[in-house]
Amino acid sequence: MYRTSAVDEVIINSLTSASVLQTGDTEKIQCFSAALAIQRERTDFGRLDIPLNKYDIFSQPVVIPVCPPVKIKKTFNANPFIRVCKIDILGVSSSALLHIGSVCEMTLQSRVKHIRHFLKNPYPDIEEEES
Amino acid sequence: MKFCVTNHELFVGEIHIIGVSLSSVVLVGDTDCINLGSAFDTPPESLVLGSSLVPL
Image 1 (cartoon, rainbow over the protein chains, first blue to last red):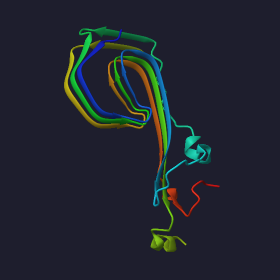
Image 2 (image 1 turned 30 degrees about the horizontal axis):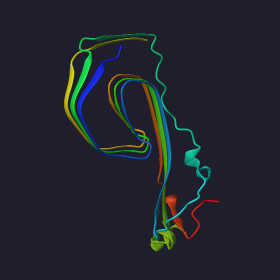
Image 3 (image 1 turned 60 degrees about the vertical axis):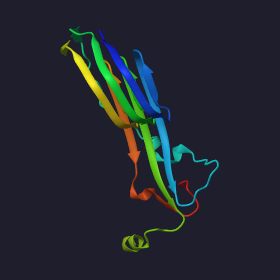
């Protein structure tokens, strides 16, 4: 039913933050990543205990279109191979996926909350206009 | 729904990608169903002033 993937060469510089490089066929993949991206004026190394449920974005549902049910699917593979000479990727991150091979079903989800943390207000003019 | 596919030759030379991030997929192969979702929050309220970082 599925074709065979043939890749001659794969070059990846970095594979970080729960990302996956999978070679071979897969029945089902489910990935989830929740990230809090904090940009701070002052660097504070050490532990940072912030509960993720304080932010709405981690609990709100993400609307995903549903695949229509296919009752009859016929696939005829005239050529049973997918050939790729070279794959060159600089970075794979945040529960992203490089998959060489066939997949039946995959579900990926990610949530990112950005915070810019200043000690003093860097935009005093804007604050006055709003008030 | 009826769905009939005929796959002929697929030959790719080189793939160059800078970055794959936030629940995205590079797939060399066949698939039946892909569900991808991403929530990304950078509103103006993301600006936090003072020492406390966690919202009340």
